[in-house]
Image (cartoon, rainbow, N blue to C red; front, side, top):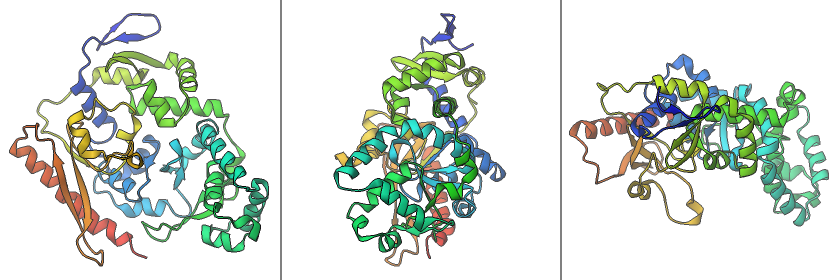
Length: 397
């Protein structure tokens, strides 16, 4: 057993947490130690809860890193009717890709974790003079019978007094509220958002809503199992909830959790996951594991405190200065579960027919062997090939 029992409440004091083991165990849980088979794609998508998708390419590259011979057409097709997956605003109000199977629980829990964001948007729109009741009625009329319209198309059909310069904020508000859902897009990087009514596109889910408190507890437990060990700061960051709500839910789940001392404070793991961690062994014969993860990959974004996966000297290689970039993690290169550098992709030609993937920086203090440099080049080349042969063909109309 890793650690020693010190109370009846399953609190574990880990004197010297094996950081290397933690990192490798995360690689195991993230399908980064061993990629999933192509036929496990749906299971992986559900298990990972939500893939960050502020940038359209992020979920595709996230899956390339985790699924053998990943075919991006599978995800692209899933994001269109019949919507086996959706792009939707979730945690912290940003866009994620989720499988339809996770929608019911996430919609229920969102009544709590999006409450403050929804209230802020409502206050802003009311101050700007928007009649939210009327615009909700008009949107319902225009989108009824499973119609899907873009923001520009809605603007043309709405009464003049509802068009205002803040219409886009109103559409975002109703997406937060669970009234609007994003529908079909024509190609992978289509930036034209088409909206439909959640009640018509997913009637069974809307009609059988979960209790928000129960849905939130279920979501938090799923998060801790997938991303644990996590601390309180990680939890309220990931969901954008208050510390009070975070503490309340951790207390409600205490019988299903194990508390450990790690990284200078109390961290939590789901009980069965903690037992799996104790049984987990690092294969000493393993060659070093290199990964190229995309901008805002959902794994590092699941944590507020990231010092166990990225050092201060490396942070400057994947973070940018300025308020607009605060918290954003740019494309990163990983060695055995630790960020060691960054990468980028750029168009080779003006016609945008070819991409070049380049390593932007590697931590100079890391004494990397020729073998590791060769692996970095191999991963760079594989990613470049994937983007050019599989992604670019899906980016055109």
